[in-house]
Image 1 (cartoon, rainbow, N blue to C red):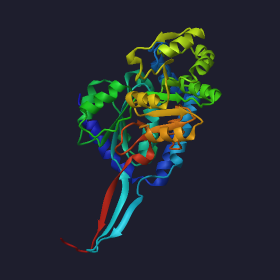
Image 2 (cartoon, helix red, strand yellow; image 1 turned 60 degrees about the vertical axis):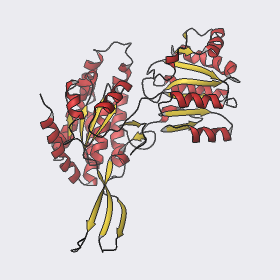
Image 3 (cartoon, rainbow, N blue to C red; image 1 turned 90 degrees about the horizontal axis):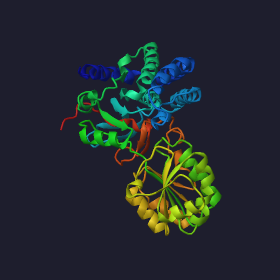
Amino acid sequence: MTILPRLEQTQQAAAAVRRLSDDAKARLLNHLASLVDSQTEAVLAQNQLDLDLLPDTDPKKDRLLLNPARLKGLAESLRDVARLPDPTGQVLLERTIEQGLQLRKIAVPLGVVGVIYESRPNVTLDVAALCLRSGNACVLKGGKEAHHSNQVLVALIHQALREFGVPEAAVTLLPPDRAVVNELLTATRYVDIIIPRGSEGLIQFVRQNSLVPTIETGAGVCHTYVEATADLNMARAIVVNAKVSRPSVCNALDCLLVDAAVAPALLPMLTEDFTKWNVEVFADEASYGILQEAGYPQLQPARAEDFGREFLDYKCAIRVVSGPDEALQHIQRYSSRHSEAIISRNQPLIDRFLTEVDAAAVYANASTRFTDGGCFGLGAEIGISTQKLHARGPFALEKLVTEKWVVLGNGQTR
């Protein structure tokens, strides 16, 4: 069955969202947050139906999981977005040209935003909130793993929309069937932009097949380079946090680069924490020898394909490098341009790293886990853009707009 009639309804509903005042949009999101708080048990029950279908060993299970704490965080995120200034209607430029025409360039909503994502039901609320706050309608294509969770969350969104006189079609959830994806990607008449969020395979499929303009929210192959002058206790804390705090997300550590001068001291320091979390290490020859001597149990010789690999699990590649030149060359070769970090006390080298590394977010002496719209004070995000046109880094409220020229005259002709 074609989805085009539903997409047309979403396009028509976008006009109703654009008509909402700044205050009405904020109140709508605050009301939705209250609905999420009040319906926690119902949401968790539907989420459990999804969780029951995944084995415990599937790394997607953590991304799928909702619990009271996560739902409370999502409700607070809705309130955070409601507090942010409306990015639409801002006058970006104003002038009068020679012929007496008054020009204004203003920020306006994109229109209909399509998002294709996999097993993260939090994306459902984040996308809806950001789109509604910025005056956009949205089309959601979630994965089958989160179908029950997405349905119950969209039902709450529809309830809030009805109470504010906005058509439910302003937030449309498509069937989880993959068959609808190709039709969505070619619906240039009804959808203004497509944003894929998920695996590298999903992102590349959308890039190669979409006729609708696409924002790439890329996979995260994130490195941390521990340089020779680093505070090793700091390095240990950062590396462990970046790897184990939530390994299934895109800003988690995938590859640790360690300067040869400090590798014999640092790597044994990691073994206790890595053993606790059962981290499987894919080590190059130098790091393998150090970790083997330290008695680390979960150790594998690294293969070429283990570098440049997004693990999304309790797994990590490690390579010993001869210095910053080799570290920078490795990152240049294998980075997905998401988030990269250096741990160092050498300020000129830190400055070089921050300048030379081509990524959406670069860090000095901090965990890459902070690359997140909420952490950056953006309320929420649709994803982390790793491309360079229109938006880079957390793709959030401020980027869900385009420009419109308004021209006021009194009879001028050319």
